[in-house]
Length: 499
Image (tube, rainbow, N blue to C red; front, side):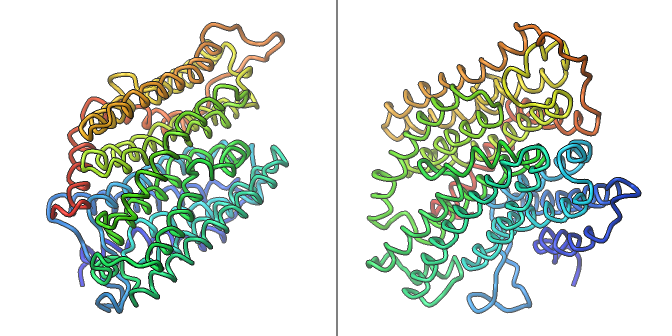
């Protein structure tokens, strides 16, 4: 069988095999350089495979890969359509930039003897997220979710060298993540009891539009479990500390990918597993997703305004941005789903760039408090420019991906007859102007703290990946043919409109 025929399984097999080999690589003599180069090459190979998958799905159609040649629903199926191909590309693309970015920063943030373990854990985390996205088997989602989560808990805890609170944050993340996973697997058990299958496509066939209490309870458990994983308001309390105290590269990776994959799973279960025709799905849209999405948009943004720590501010901002994604889903329209998928992809680019900029500041200044950013436009102009552009993209300024996301969401709101929701989107976006503007004002208008030592830019190994993500924020803000077109086609397929 040709390598092309094995393409769908390569994003899982390559990092899964590479991760244990990474642990064996020397740390003391070379300072972890070999492990970093190895992991970076692996991530680039995975990104190349995911881009090839996206191209194949976009031009030929969905891919169905049967593991061990066992046909579904008996065997495990990797099924890839445009929705998960887009998410695969996001996760692998961010990882391909985070790995080279991380080399210098983690040497100052974690114990040197942990560097090989760090890269192995990051590879495993990437594997888990890609597996969650690519699989067409519901129980496989749970397995890969735990693979990613367990490695993420360890990665967050590695920040304890800089701040011992990383241990508490990791433990809290572990407890909340375990609760979410428990709810999710209980929901899967109920759905399996009702249908006798775990293949996602077969689940929908077996349900056949017939509802009962077991199916309703199963969906409720799945939604709550993934809501915890996605940091959906008010189940987001694990996120601020996990993002704030994790090593900079870890924050950049999980902020750009982890919650996006969880939102994708929610979308996948609503449209591929359950189907939007059930009355309880409509009730979930109107009485659960929409109110919580709007509450998150405002509550999290208001809390972000009063944060003195940039990483915590960005974490609360992410809770609000998750609200935008879920709001689009709750419209129950093709255009609303398109807006959610567009923002899911775009927000990954935005938050990856912002956390990378925060990591550069942490490396040179040694703090991520807002006061540490004083005079940064003159002290670290490239980093400041990257933060400002990505921050403006978060706000939704034209010529950036953030503007495309907000435009799509506004169009979906008015198209669905919910003009009031469009005005709420604008109002919550104005709140982001305040907290992003605070940092920009400090960087540009305030002088450096008295007695502050001279600093220089972070090394090119950090600047280049950050600049590439910033460039992506502008490129996909100007050229929307790829992201919006693919999202529209993906939404059309998910809504039952064919390929």
